[in-house]
Image 1 (cartoon, rainbow, N blue to C red):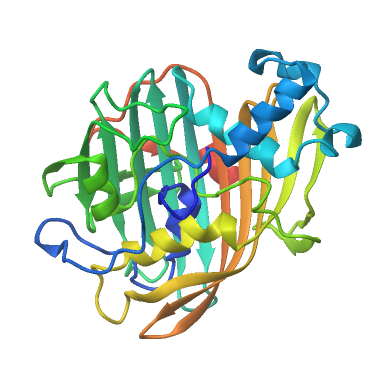
Image 2: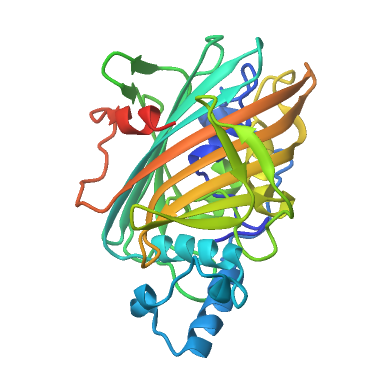
Length: 355
């Protein structure tokens, strides 16, 4: 699913955008201060879905017959944008009413200023969802945890632009997090109480709802021409040049994304710092110079893995920080129970090893 600047989806890549010393230690309760919010409404952007559905109709192919189409073929790519194919894969994932989950590991590197790690876990059990994010930093200034649930069966995702309904439980931990690096586990101590909010209030207060596990607006308008040639977290060369390859029977999309794709990331990052110390709070949304995504799917466009590289600047009163961001998200389709507050740790071994 894609979101224009309307909805600010908290994927783990969003979390690392604000990875400058101290900017993520925002608090709940009395620390939720009225401030400018860099978001709009919270409606779905169906650009990629509508374009892809029109393409399928022209090909006389149903949505459950995607394996009939070779999406790596130039003949097909002349008829449908690679951005709309990848965007449809996101839409398909978000609209599954079954068992899905992912674990994500993100690293943000700001030179000698501060390096930040965010571990995220998303679980869908039928109509119910939970999303947890746990953060630590090399400076020791940044440490937090947050988890949100939708325990209301009226929280639905439809093929309309109707705003989301239902109630959400949200917990925040401003500092008490534990990382066991030897065993690749992390845990937050949520001792600040529970907040029950509507979708509108979730967007206003914390800028995400559990239904949205992606942070990039991917469609035919969010691709940058040319190639971004860079190195990933492990210094391996990679070219993001809007191509698709077949690897081990799966599709791998290499996407070079523009500012349309990263707008929700930038808005979330700025909004998430509004309760910060004045020196740490962002004065404006970060500016992305480059953003590359490597999306791996099955032949029927079921997402298996997402990796990203980002090059952006963060603006605070304290400094302007050039930052490199890296993310690896590992997807699963096995049944899992939702996280239990203060009892469940996140195991991020596969996510970190795959960076």
